[in-house]
Length: 259
Length: 324
Image 1: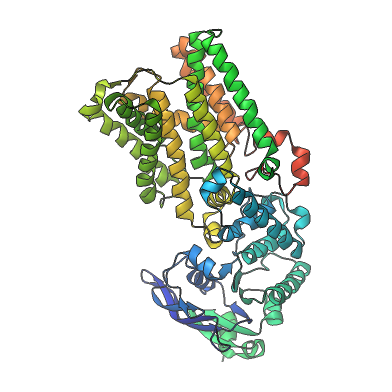
Image 2: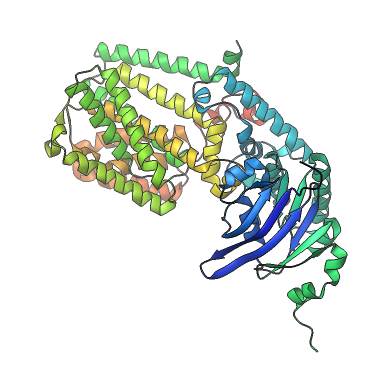
């Protein structure tokens, strides 16, 4: 990959549910290593756009390319293997599994042992499972979740569940990480911790991050560029400073000025 | 040796099981336990296989299938054709029963596993009924009057099948593949987003479950002298479903335990046919009111013995549970 080809390139992508255009004509480019925010009022289509990127929905128009490879119409699990991983707005952990197993599920695509070797407990099964376990434990240490790794995921406090979800998404070894409202429901202190965590993982894993967020303090604080979505269309993009002063954005959030 | 060290608990439980099997064999051949109890024992064994196989589909993968008697029927008839019509040895019958049911599982699973929850339940219920009606209308296998089968099911075959079923399902569950299945149960969308091919694992779990239901069918057919389509109605499917639900969704030892208990209960209640269904239903109602998670919840029997060990969580502890 040359330095100036974008990691993610979205061309006129959109989806329509029957007569309803949920997202349309979105053009977006992410360069390797960028941290970009996606904001917009409720119902603007942000999460729908994430679902387009991850293959939950198939775009009805336009194209999505990762590293120059077209992703349209591929099933979600293949897109994840190609390098897009995500968290969810409403936490979706594997509740009954332990913290460790949650991360191990994300390592599944790395496992090289077949079903047969697991059923007959061939040496390959043990070496691969051991490798996965060691890797997962090492990984949880980065997120300081190793002290709760045998805890059932649903029993974790909210902040740790959020952290685990990010850890799990990262374990899938993405090039591009999509965070859907990571700070939702967090208190200011937890949000601050989250900002530090995002900065840390970005440096450590050489990641490109696209994040949806309502907490403007967080968005303006960490993002280098921001895209604004309203009624399914991009209405602005630029640096946090530009976005803050963009009349269209202010209008989308606060309504028109009375003249 | 490396493998032995990894799974000490596993191998010792197999040795224990084999000792139990041999002791039972002596009791049976020595006619120390009477025929009635031996027959009950066979019933229990067949039900254990059925419960464990459905546990993989419902308890682990979370696919609510209620047509399990259909696979039982496919296995029963396929094996009976092999042994009675083609006159091949019983071993082939067992294998053919399993393979035929697994193929039926694939054929049924690939289209229907796209459905979720209630819809899948209805589709599998339909499958079970279709299988029954198909056998009812095939003259080759005797139609409504059924097919006579020689009694070939013996304790070693039965015990070997139980052991194999439990080992395969346990080993599958406690591996990355089993974890993939559990992740589908826990949250299909998240599993998909983590790179799990959810359809593939649903179909695999369905096929393995169907295979062992087919093996159970072969053992069932050769235990009875006659098989008739009426033996495989949807009430049979519900019987198996009850083992899994009562034992605790997600616990194999729970399903096995429930299969043993309920088979014993229903056998002894056979002398009071009018009371049998009432007591049986009462047990279920009380159970669901006071312990809706089932006998074992999602825990396994072994987890009670090694609480200390799992808390430490040795890296190489193979018998550690994925489910609990």
